[in-house]
Image (cartoon, rainbow, N blue to C red; front, top):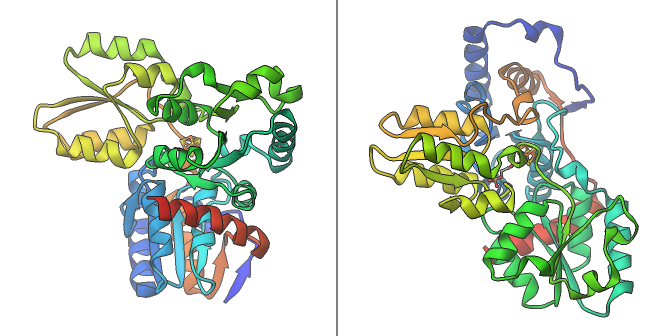
Length: 364
Ligand code: 13P
Ligand code: SF4
């Protein structure tokens, strides 16, 4: 099968009506049969996620990618770092496809390998203490490989606590990359005081920290964030509680620390889905996460009130890039014997990144 370096959706797909797209995707899926598995993240649009064989959070989808060797093609409806993780975890005979190569993640882009290497060297010269690196799965394969090479592990928002406990049971300090909020929320819930978690700013000399601050810290948090989740503010929690007395607030741990502290519950997308599904009819939920998931939960549970924590809604524009047009094009390309938009990690990076991912999968 030829791999084509195509990135642009062919013109002929742009104007296809919804019904025709649905029919063509269904037909291509059926023709590809067991050769294909489609994975869909909870933040995908309904028109796309309805074609997923499996829907889930980052942890579930990476476990699935590692356990479906019978599928020749894994089409990942999510963002680039997820497709990279699937390529790292899947077998050599499998091909991972991201329907639109422009579906990146701004948080993953906030930690570059050379910046992390500088930080690592400076931390080593600032103190004798042993440091273990932990990277959130929302990071590039190069960062995961760095972490694997240096004894650390990957985590997702569902297992960050377990991974951080594992790291701190064998080292005095943890370096948490690239989401400052997930790192702080996790550390705080483990009983680490806020002043023992410092933020390393890669744009500043010595991370912008005094030597004493670095020496005292238990966790060094990378200065990175999710621009979607960071928009939720404490006043949104107060406002929604005034509007709907008795409503339960559930927030994703990529939200700021003060929002998570005010929330009734904090958890990954999978946990949010589970909590709402298990709640009795008449329950009221204000959800602090991406708007497609919130709207889907509201639609799937019409006997419960499910609203976004913030009125105007928060959309992940890169998740949104995966369109039915892109899905149709990549599937029909496979039928025509061409692989469009293959995500492939080089063998050296793959080997170290796999070590960091496997450590995580053993911990959970
Ligand atoms: P989870 O799917 O792990 O909850 O993460 C959400 C997210 O932001 C993915 O980018
Ligand atoms: Fe990245 Fe945030 Fe979008 Fe998740 S929601 S993919 S962290 S930008």
